[in-house]
Image (cartoon, rainbow, N blue to C red):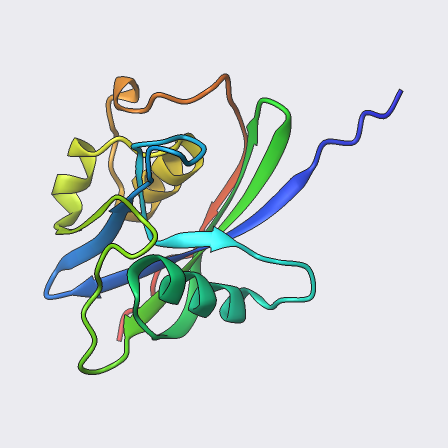
Amino acid sequence: MNDVVPHIRVVAAVIEQQGRYLINQRRSTAVLAGLWEFPSGRVEPGETDEAALQRELQERVGVDIDVGGSTAHRTHRYDGYVVDLVLYRATIAPNQRPRPVGVADLRWVAPQELENFAFPPADQATADLLFGMKRDASLSKPPQTKSVRAQVQKPAVN
């Protein structure tokens, strides 16, 4: 019997403009459909986190980005697989505006508004840690889950 559980590495962009953060909604045909998340995607074999994030942001919200440092990491066990989620600070290239290319919708929200959006469990827990929030767990509609590990790196204060 093979007990190997697939691990999926996912990278997400934390993009802030004027105190608001970019989030997008998963399409109705996606896994965990209708939930919100920071723009993100899977890292393909042989791809760096930065290259994956740049590709995914172009495919999902139609913008080029500059990838900064990692701000948070979370490993989350879903039923049948494990997601290793890494959040990176990112900035949108000048004169570009996000649009819902490969997602259902997108919004710019203040940190205190994030609690009004249902996120997948790994994303919700990471955002909660990153922004120091406690959310109502009923907002998320996940499959059976179990948290494995969380790490957050606080941004440097200049």
